[in-house]
Image 1 (cartoon, rainbow, N blue to C red):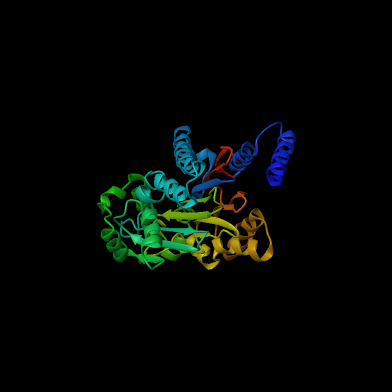
Image 2: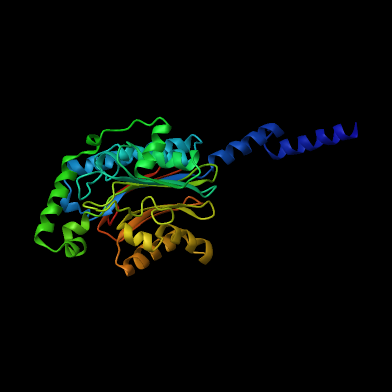
Length: 354
């Protein structure tokens, strides 16, 4: 009897202190308040390079903005509804892969031999599990296959015919290679090949401005979900005129893609050889974990100092465990967009956000 009286009195006091609301109502309000303050966000990129306002027509600029907005909005909606960062990253990248505007999937560049060879990777920050594919030629959305490598195989990276055999076993449709043909990418290859006839190949590859810029392209995404889990993914057609089945940083975990719930999720774009040598994506995470740097400090250190010191250029997009975002690049521009829990959207192409 005393316990009942004590409980009644305690409830009355609690109600008096909270404007007459019952204990269950107070708990419901507390849970709703917690839900409203749950943090999440997503950031994407569509490649870095010589992206200049004076080279961009209004119609082309509009097309890029609309596609970036579409891709990030799909990922943001997944996160908003309580979906996973892995799903948000995968779906956002898929939309970019399906667009001929970007050097991934449908819009992939051509190799020296006139083929399209696609690479992709994805990483789960909660488990440090990862998956990647390289050199595939018949996969419409390589990011999907990279995720299946992570979740449905014992391996991290599969290459070429083996990766496609794995895809066939999972029921993937094998696309005819004509699906990846785009006229502007093919014309870019022809211009590169013409330059090779005039100049020593090594000199062209590293000194000719047009050839140098042809190495850029890639799409990627990084996200934080309401559960506090980070994920990142990257997809690319690689470098125009690449030879000998060259593989860049995009499918390399730690170079082009990295995610760790302790720190951040990162996707890179740029001259892949230098991002591999500097282990750029992981280095940003390591600087945060071991030196206590903020995401922006770490991103700036790697992209503005370490990669250029080796001779490379490009950029990254990243999000940390608290939802802070970095979009760092040392080129003239980088296609990029970010959207936070409040639904605030930022889209940029050039050095200064438009």
